[in-house]
Image (cartoon, rainbow, N blue to C red; front, side, top):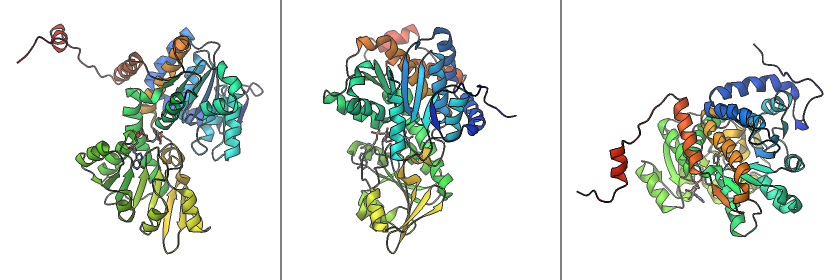
Length: 430
Ligand SMILES: NC(=O)c1ccc[n+]([C@@H]2O[C@H](COP(=O)([O-])OP(=O)(O)OC[C@H]3O[C@@H](n4cnc5c(N)ncnc54)[C@H](O)[C@@H]3O)[C@@H](O)[C@H]2O)c1
């Protein structure tokens, strides 16, 4: 059984992808992911009937994965004109990019491994369609529009943002009065970060590290920098596979949480000579630096799951290696830093997308249901919103959870009228 493109040649939307010939593999994988995305499928069916995004141009800068393809299909079914570029040069799945163009008629600009110039050329191609709604993962499209295309900003009704790092950038823009349209922070939805960041990134980070290195985690010393939603997901999964996990934090409450969850807590300086595997998930820069690389053990492995490839001081690592860098496996580079060799997975970019397939579809089902419903929300309500960062309305969050439980065939209880009265009354005492 092969899935092949049904779109006639010559009817393709504008695009720049690696190889349209990969489309049939992409279609099969997109359909596979779709089976795990029942909530998004229900939304797509409603969108097909109601067409809530009719006439809108959505410019999206997201990881080009099978799950994103299903989101793009949903937005198109709602009547939107959709253009997509990659939100990271290494996360693109070339077969998915090909299928989006050849099968689903969606403009896509993404080539796995694209250089910085191509990355920005692709982002500019999205800006060239003059989006009326932006959909970002890391705020690159919003930043580009504000910094290089200020004349276009007034055309944008509103935007949505997928990840923690993007939300931090947007909040900083809003605080400076620099943000010129409203943005809904999809990451802030409980049905996003509690599940996607923790279970999705937790599992897929382990997946990326194992696919790249095939190391045994049982018995290995692993240091995880950052005990936020992502870090705690990685820590608990590594722990479950028998690793000895230490957490590095700067927030005393999160450090305490890590300790009471059963992990060791160390400074970065203490962890450097102790761990055999290092994983960063802080959203910060230069967590591991020159002095830490120098203190690491022979054969240490480093990976990053934070949004940008800035969590490890890679310029310092390259300088220390003085050109003695070689590919030792697919997605693993070895740096000879004088008397010892250390390894880096996926060039220090998000390891779960660079060396694996990103989050499982079942979790992206909820994240992208929030994206689709937030796009509908801003289409309807943009005129009532200021130039601020908004949380996803509670009703959307609750609806996503309700639909997910229903799709999983799980029922929950409702309070009895007596219970409702009890929990809202101040008159009951001991
Ligand atoms: N790989 C993926 O697919 C994926 C998915 C979701 C989020 N992310 C990214 O992962 C990063 C973390 O996201 P999150 O939701 O866990 O954020 P979060 O804010 O919940 O957690 C980050 C944690 O890092 C800690 N931290 C900051 N600087 C530190 C330092 N120098 N040393 C040690 N700890 C430090 C903070 O105190 C905080 O507890 C962000 O960049 C986010 O965009 C990646």
